[in-house]
Length: 131
Ligand code: CMP
Image (cartoon, rainbow, N blue to C red; front, side, top):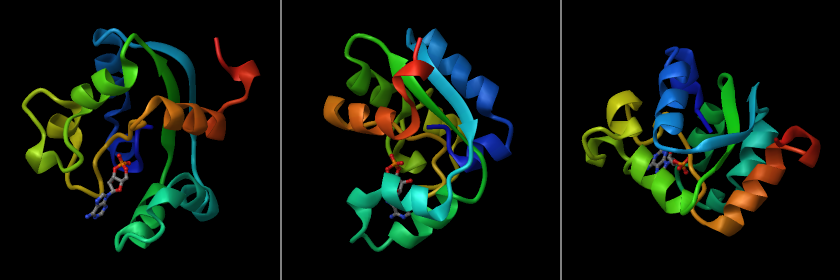
């Protein structure tokens, strides 16, 4: 996902370019906006965390881009490409280092496992929307 901070600052094109240049291919993509209920459901795994309410509020505050990206070793390579959750700790040249402002408003989300990638892809896309 490209998050509301990044879509709001018009970083969308530059971030998608990073995905493509890193060798990811786009299987599905959409511009949409999450309701609070949808953002809450997407991040349900974090329900007990102190930042959950803030996360849900932020993720429903503006448009996002949801995408399914494909590559060998995609989960690990994507996490390398985006950098640490907290942009202050992200390595030079990573998307969060270059485009994110804070741990909450950190520009992009990536699935943390193949299993969650399937769950998160199914959250946004039907089979008819994947090419
Ligand atoms: P993401 O990869 O989308 O997965 C969960 C998100 O929770 C994470 O990126 C951060 O944006 C957010 N998050 C994690 N820790 C904090 C925190 N301490 N305060 C606010 N948001 C956080």
